[in-house]
Length: 195
Image 1 (cartoon, rainbow, N blue to C red):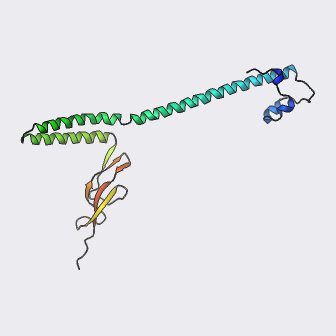
Image 2 (image 1 turned 135 degrees about the vertical axis):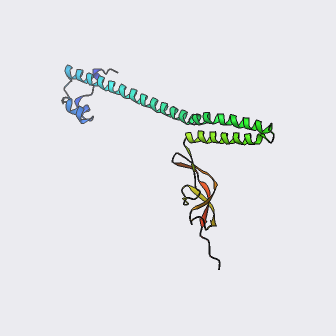
Image 3 (image 1 turned 180 degrees about the vertical axis):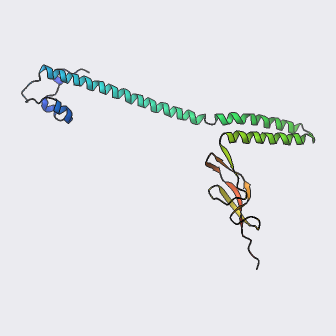
């Protein structure tokens, strides 16, 4: 983008630009023409400006490409985040299918081995989930905490202190430090004296 000498502004036109450029450009009276040195200096500055403009355009394009690539990688990460967990659970599904097949073909003696097999499958599933960060919220006998417990009722009790969990009806779960599901509990209260 070369500029011809006719398109180069005079000194009075350049004073509206930035102060640094105005200070560096020699001041000329309106009737004076630019010297060859001044024209060359202006051409050099115009070339530098063009170079900076091209660099800005490339940097902007690179940044846009980076944003698109980061968004695509984020989508892929979300899409395949559960891949590791699912690959651990697939063998558990295989074992459940084998257990169901064995239950259909089983006699009463095979019931104990079926029970042992299902217990092993449960253990395998718990292990796969805990490897992925799942923790059980054990509430029995602990003080009631509304942040991790959900009380469905209260019962009078002499054995369990007031405000403590007397019975856990459904387990709660956390994934690392985040609560997924609160434990459903029955909370103990003082035994009311009979009148």
